[in-house]
Length: 361
Image (cartoon, rainbow, N blue to C red):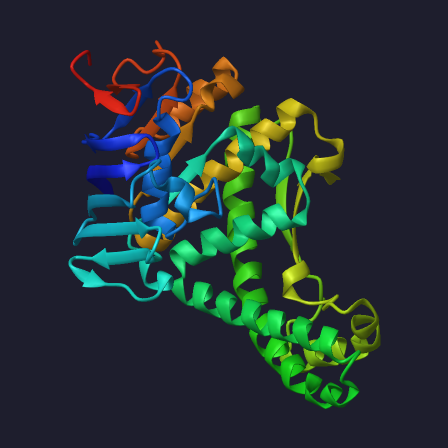
């Protein structure tokens, strides 16, 4: 999987630029606030139809510009795609693939696969279950677009049930409709849980292997799925929702279900989040990110695009060396504030004030 061309117009601090990355490692060098991360954000936007930095899409439109345009050309082994994404203050987001409109964002999933690793992704290891659920959902959506649509349905049903729980206090007669939403959440939730269980099992196998190689085999990393509801059966989930209905009515929110699942990370049986050192947490995050590459390769038969956003300073020399060896077959976009001697074969791009200069490469 290769990006051949990325063209930006009025995107963040880019009035207009054309970025032509090569097959291997592409080193994007520049001072802070010059636009390095904005390039990666544009690629991420093409993969997921959203930013990894903000939920406010209009922030990606350059100041005083009516809209922002992103064009990306990519190649896979047997196909090629041209994506066109337009953000407008008036019309919102519009997406086309090969000239045809994509009315639903789910149709974008899987066209281009990417893995992004930035310092903030330590949150997968360090923060609460919500961060790991978000990771689960995004990675499954890339390789299984059906999962994305299923997740959308589940979240819509969850919102409707929560609205109903709030309304029943003033309209008690509406309580009779709760079983309808219980049934929907049980049906959709059981399907989500099966996807997540299979994903975590495969990720654990890959992450454990990668972690052993990075750490020299000193510790065992385990990724395990911990569903909020122990049973994956639809009928059992329905019974759980019914049994917690009184508590849900009191708290006016749905207290049990797939939206409270956890993906646990342990080293030698101990939670990394609570007991891991900073170095152990960084190693675990790196192992998980590299395992994303492997997992997507297994699913699609192709390496995804890898984006490393200023993470080299977070890794010691041994981890940098391991990372460099592992990503050789992958098209990689690396941002840095300085030229890295450890990347001698990289194609170099210099960013200043939203302009790309490769003349010094």
